[in-house]
Length: 244
Image (cartoon, rainbow, N blue to C red):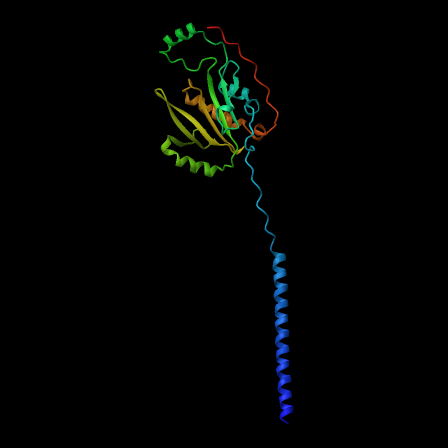
């Protein structure tokens, strides 16, 4: 009798264990299926796209490609064709440094002396003098927000936030004799480069310098910083300098 009861109890226990195991397997299977369904519903994370600088490091852009010289001549209302000098070697961090030179007949020493007497020795920008200079920095990845923050950090270095171009610029004020002359630094939305535009040593006309900066902003697009891109047609040469 005891043996039968013992067998019955053992059988019942085994049934419970088997039932529990089956329940565990069913639960595990349900969990597996739910996990698979969740994986299918969740899109695979995409790798962040690689961001490259506007111009590969070390590459330079010829000024004949970067600068639309006729556009600058028209904007500055220059009567004589401007000359374009590529002086990129002047700045090791730049892809281009381009100086625009006022065209026309160069004055002799006697003519300059005569003009100096008439203008109280304020000759201004003469033919053959640098009118404005455009420098392009394109080897780094920049953003407009980071550029603005950087301008605030340089406030004690005579840099100030400036909207006089109609867009944001971080303008550096440089004492040039008795004049305060502006150099416009700005993030160019089209190319993602930082452009710096200033006047030549004799140019203290901030309106003229601002016009150069706005023209650079409006004419320099991605095609003009393309490595190996086609060069723009050069402007007609100005008159050769006269012998002093």
